[in-house]
Amino acid sequence: MSETAVSCDDLTKHYQMGEVTVRALRGATFEVPAGSLVVLLGPSGSGKTTLLNLIGGLDTPTDGRVFVDHQEVSKLVEPELTEYRRKKVGFIFQFFNLVPTLTAQENVGLIGELAGNADEAADLLERVGLGERLDYYPAELSGGEQQRVAIARALIKRPYLLLGDEPTGNLDYETGLLVLQLIRDISDESDLTVLMVTHNAAIGQMADIVISLRSGHVEDIEENESPIPPSELRW
Ligand code: ADP
Ligand code: MG
Image (cartoon, rainbow, N blue to C red; front, top):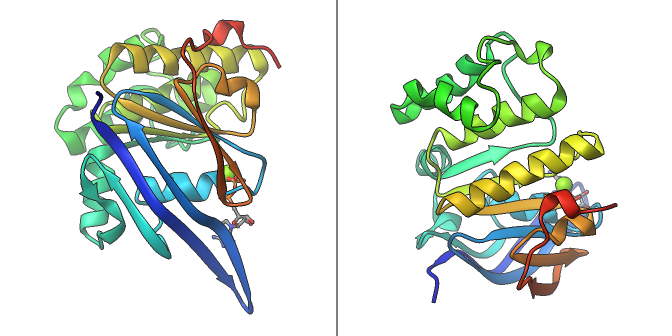
């Protein structure tokens, strides 16, 4: 039996918009085994980003609990919440969020400094296939290359969790597949637990576990006995 990395118990998030209550997440309950690659799948507005942000400590729940590595994230308050995000969670986003005035190596090294391993930036960029691009600025890199820098930046913290919100949503099909292959390889070669949000059902086929969301509910949880290599995904 594998260790449980993430555990959500009746996790609920409401947003108050004036007089309207938006029920973004309506009681999500599930467990994620350590080391697995999980896809959170659902249409736009189904609560994927809300759920990922609660797990990553970017937002706090209205009700329910979330545990990561046996720590109850849902009861953390600042500054512990920031500490949790900084130490435990690597994030990758749809729009890369690199610092435009820093080179690839500086973008990764900046986060590495917080963890005391900034000197690993070049090796990590090599690992994601950018060994020849260390001194390039984000504007000099393609979208796929920028996302690789963002992945290296997430990994330099040696996080417990890698969270991706539509990480290929802004990439063309071929480039997207290469980034998905990199994410699959990282999952296979490390103990990292990876949670990736997407609205694309085809991407679910590369995951070990697919958690389907609809209107803020967990609709289905499916285990893939034999995940499909990203290079074979079609949509
Ligand atoms: P998804 O990522 O699946 O597209 P979200 O988690 O972003 O879905 O959003 C779920 C629902 O919650 C949507 O109806 C969205 O409009 C609403 N929502 C998300 N964030 C906020 C917010 N900060 N304030 C108000 N409503 C929000
Ligand atoms: Mg979203």
